[in-house]
Structure formats: structure tokens, C-alpha cells
Amino acid sequence: MSSDSSLFGNVLPGYPGAAKIGDESPKDATGFDTRLIVPIVVVLSFIAVINTLQAFYVFFSGDHSITNFVRFLVSNLFYSWYFIIPALAVRRLSTTVSLTRKTLLSWVSIHLSTLIVLTVVHQVTSLLVDRIVLGSRQSETVFSVLFNNPAIWGDFVVYVLFLLGFYMIAYRRRIQENEVKYSRLETELVKARLHELRNRIHPQFLLNTLGEVSSLVHRKRDKEANRVLSLLSDFLRITVYDNDREFTFVEEEVGFLDNFIAIESARFGNKLEVSRRIDHNALKATAPNFILQPIVEELVLRNLDSSGEPCEIRIEVMKEEDSINIAIKGRKKGGDSAVRRESAGEGIFDITRARLEQLYPGENEFSEGFDAEGWRIVQMRFPCRTSATISDSDGGVSG
Image (cartoon, rainbow, N blue to C red):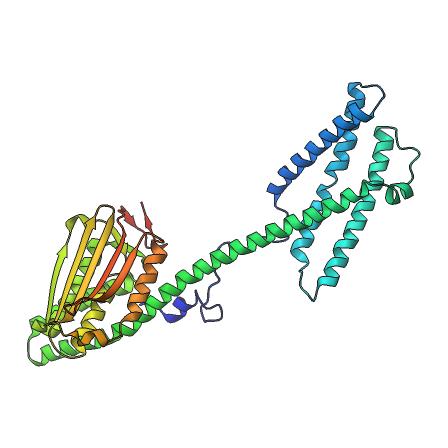
């Protein structure tokens, strides 16, 4: 049986032996995603080409030569590609400068000062490039470029668009990361609840079985005592070493259940009547590990141990089309309806329902209740899947 520290360490960060969610190395949140550069460059280049065609063929009245067109294109490409620098700056600031009510003033100050510096540098260098490449704008001064230039508002608009875009990307990424963490925590919680319930039931089962062995030895029924010990050894071996496997084969699950029933039959004798109906076509399908035994144990516990009266258990495992259908029934012999008032056992039913939904989301059914004859019926359905290999390392099915 796995220890509590290793079990709950996966769920509770502060618990001894705790492990952090996810084994992968953390990514640098401040780094610029290189996948964003390509679309940004493509868009900026497209804008530069449009501006060049418009300026060269509509507003330019000089020589329409290839040389002049290349000069116009170089000027516009420089003007457009410069916006990659604000993109890098905004990306960096959007991940390093938090935005809260307490930091709103400093957040606005940082972005505003960055915007002003980038705009001044952009406009001044564009003026110098135009003078060198085009030989134009000789009469313009830095003052007129900064304070009498309508194009300067383009820098403000582009900066704000980058700012909104990167904050939306960061927000979406945080949502996705939280969804992954929530899904993992939910999975670990279901496993933890199953382990906790199993740890609570097995000691009682173990003590009762050892008590029966002691009784058999005292009555000098050594062969029966050895048989029960052998069954108990197999039961504990499977419980300990297969405890962390998420899936198994239906055949193995039924075999493990038969082992448990044999032990219980040795304890209760003719007070426990078990009938089975197993479809051989279902034996090679995969099933969640320990999906049958806890439910049967619960029905035995509630219908037999509580009163000492004879108990009936019926188990049916069938393959129908592409699904495995399981029905488990239990009642006091004679159909005593008093069992209806018992609320115990809801824990294992809730856990089983949650496990099926976690393993087969939207592809499973689980129900439990009573019929008119006093049977407590547990029914479940999940997809019929086959596999050549059951993986012990990752808790899943491969093949």
C-alpha cells in the first residue's frame, strides 16, 4: 500500500513529500515567443509595401524608376519594422509589470514613459533615414517632426494595440495553465479519495480474515487455514503492487474479485451467496483498476456484517456493442427492505462515479439505487477498449 506522504504529496504542496504539479521545466514568462515575430514582420512588411505603392505612384511626381521605388521601399520598411522594438518592449513589460489597483499609477507611468521614448527615437531616426536614403525632408527639424507631425499618433495607436494584444495572450495562457492545473488536481483528488477509502476498508478486512485464520487453526483445520492465507497473500500482493495502475483487463479485475469472494466465503460460509454472469467477450477489454471489488465489499459489509443475516450478491459483466456494462446487486436474503434506510457506502459510489467521468469524460454512465425486491443495484457503463499492454509507469493504457 502506498504511503500517505507520497500520495497526498501530489495534492498538498505543503505536505511532506509534496511534489509540484507538472514535471516539466518552467518556461521563461518574460521571454518573447519567437513564433510571434513572423506574423508581426509579415504584417508590418505588407503595410510598408502598401505605403510605398501609394507614396510612389500617387504622391510622388518625380522619376518613377526602380531605383527610386527601392528607396521608397527601404524607407517604409525601416519605418514599419521599427515597430518590432515596441513589440519586444511591450511583451517584456506585460510580463514583468503587474497591473493591480495598487500598482495602477506606476504601471501607467512606466508604459507612458516607454511610449514617449520609443516614439521620439522612432520619428527622429525615420527623419535621418529619409534624408540619407531619399534625400528628402531636409527642411524638417526634429521639433517639427515631434510636435507638428500627425503620423506620430500612429506610434501611440500601435503601442496600445500591442499592449492589449499581449495582455490578452498572457491572460489566455494563464487560463489554460489554470485549467491544466485544475484538471491534474481533480485527478489527484479522485485518486487520493480512492486510496483513503481503500486504506480505511482494508485494515478491517485484513483483521477479520486473520481472525478467521486464527479460528481455523484453533479448530485444527490447517488445510483451510493455509488456503485462506494463500488467498490473502495473493489479495495483498495485487493490492500493494497494482495499487497505482489506472487500468487493468476485465479478466484480471474479475480474477481479483474472485479472490476476494473466496476469502469472504471462507469467513461467512453459506451466509454469503454469490452468483456471476461474465461475458467472455468482455474479458480482454480494459477497465479501471479496482472498479469491482470495492463495490462488492461495500455491499457485503452493509448487507451481511451489519446484521449477520445471509446475503446475496449478483455480478454481471457484459459486452454490448462498443461498451462494457456492469451490474452489481446486493441484498439481505429474502429481500429485507430495511436496507433502503442505510446511507452508508455513498463514498465509494461517489468516488467510482468521479473516476469513470475522469477516465471516460462524457462516455460513461453510473447509477445506483434500490428496486422493488430490496436489491441495491449499482450499474455502470464505459467504452470497450482493448490493449496489448497495460502501462505501470504512467498509469494509463498503451498499445
